[in-house]
Amino acid sequence: MPETNENNAPLDFIREIVANDLRNNKNDGKVVTRFPPEPNGYLHIGHAKAICLDFGVAAENGGVCHLRFDDTNPTKEDTEYVESIINDVKWLGFDFGEHLYYASDYFERMYECAVTLIRKGLAYVCDLSPEQWEEYRGTLNVPGKESPGRARSVEENLDLFTRMRNGEFEDGAMVLRARIDMASPNIHMRDPVIYRIRRVHHFRHGDKWCVYPMYDFAHPLEDAFEGVTHSFCTLEFEIHRPLYDWVLQALEFKNPPVQTEFSRLNLTYTVMSKRKLLQLVKEHYVAGWDDPRMPTICGMRRRGIPASAIRKLCRTVGITKFEALTDIALLEHCVREELNATAPRFLAVLDPLKVTITNYPAEGVEPLDAVNNPEDPAAGSRKLPFGRELYIEKSDFMLEPVKGYFRLAPGREVRLRYGYFIKCEEAVLDEAGNVVELKCTFDPATRGGSAPDGRKVKGTIHWVSADSAVPAEVRLYERLFTVEQPGADGTNFLEQLNPDSIRIVKALVEPKLAELPAGTSVQFERNGYYCVDPDSKPGAPVFSRTVTLKDSWGNKQGK
Image (tube, rainbow, N blue to C red; front, side, top):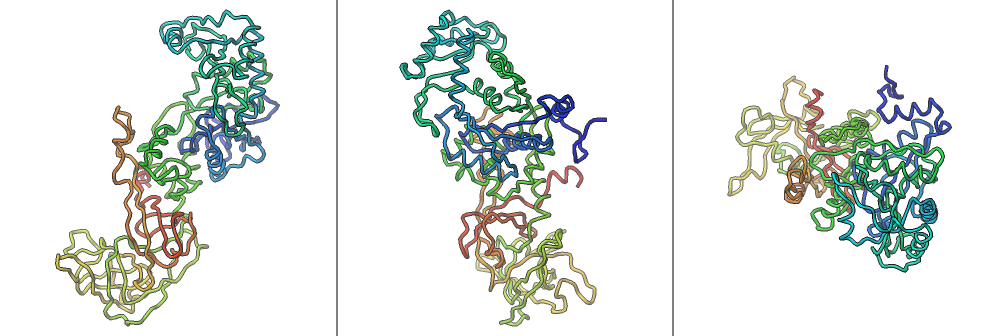
């Protein structure tokens, strides 16, 4: 029988590795993981899978997970990204406590490690020109050629590396390379660069350094310095693992960390490339990193996607070694399941059509009882103001109803949600023949939605009272791209942007909706799930659509 976790679910291959290590008391029974983002952009849904794995494995085994910023490339790094990453990790529900680290705090130790490699004859200074690099590196089928710098003495390499640090050479004039194997079939092992000269202001250390370690050299050292036991990376780092191991072995670390790779999370109708996401922002195809159409965690948060739904998606997708494309409908399904249980229901009319109830008192207003969430009895109820003039959705009336249409039409009766039966007596048209108002009557005996005489109606529609409804801006978001894999066919991904990914409407909403703070998730009954946007102002709420009520994934699964 396969091992299971506390939810009685089979362990994935990474958790099986950790469980086996614990059985064998490897690392003295400790589990230390890390999430190591580069502070050069905002986190996206793909990072969420790594976060859930790194923090999840640590928590499940009584260990700790470090949040470490790999700030070894100062050309693109900024405190803005650091702050956003910290916020996103916490919002997703994970606590790194005191274990917040920066690779740049290890720069001196990394430099000394490089010096050690030089002294051991395992690193050398190389001054090949860019043109010579092309000539010397070889190809997948042709071995590389040794750089003339490989023949330098230890003393000469130490002197040159010291002078590199002291700023005596121009950017790109020389690099420090590991001495491994120029004939290796793995190009990453052909004497890779481990240090380069770069005169760039570092956002934490200013101008103290002008030589910076390469990521493939810094990453294993950071893990080793911090006592990480299990280093999880996505599959593109698998080919880099031999170099990871070589660095730790060459420097003779005891009980070195072990790198294990897993498949990343890819969603349909989405791009995950930091470069492409940055292009969308910089060229104003979206309104910023937190645009609700973006796959960034801050964008999803602004759209009203719960952190619990993202964690649920990551659990559902699982941890494998196989690259796959996840249908975005699965994320939407997870969102609906979470919000169905937690989001309060409200009435909102997105395309208003006026209704006058001719037999209702002109000045009359009465409160009707409305349930806040039928899935949550503790959510209670609220009062809805009801009066002579209402607004309903234009789509809930048809002048000449087609077969199967059960909503309002001339001479037809429907139920108002939480209210009365009303019957359309007359449709008022403008000069162009458009319906601009309905004259209806109501049955006072049907308060609460049922008729004492037992008659039934097939349609129930939502509404708002004209006297108390609050104008609101509603942003209707759709998928950002029109194809499942933007750019996969060689087309410029920007040409596959969905021109209808956002549509803004002026809606009318019940009064309670104007009182909710930004970030609150709600359901507009019969319409979808929405979130109060930070752009809201007192008396002028703004809502972003999180997801519609239709669940294509759930329907596929027979739910």
